[in-house]
Amino acid sequence: MNGEMDEFDEKEKERRKKDQIEYRTKQKTSNIFLFFGTIFEIIITLTIVMALVLLEAIIILKWMNLPDTVKGNVFQFVSVAGLIGGIVLGFMTYKALGRLVIKKFHLEDKLREDVLNQFKTRKEYKEYYEKKQQR
Image (cartoon, rainbow, N blue to C red):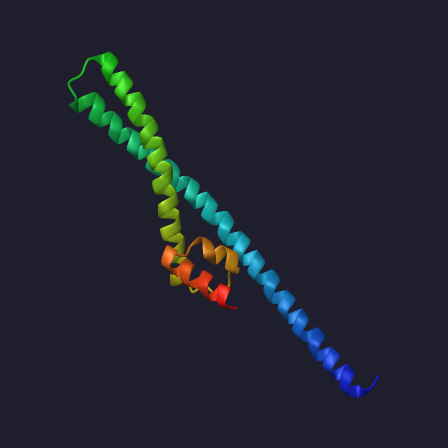
């Protein structure tokens, strides 16, 4: 082969090697971010659920003048609602805190696109999706 093609192939190999290294770095960073974020999200959700159930117990058992059997039934129903509400609040808190951490530590260029999409608001994701459709 001539020297011009060999030089082009070497440049292409270097570019691909650099792209592979960048992709692997982003993948490793994204996995670490998601691992610790998931642990943090579990802790936040459990804390919120426990706080809601404790608050419900205090309100129902201390401040409401109801017969004991009615208090038990009301507490069971409200505890289930508190569990579901705590899980939803935990997810919302996780997403908001994740978005805050990404912006504060400038992680936009260090994480994969699919990870960043999880933390976008509806408006941001809609703009991203429209740009992607225009390509």
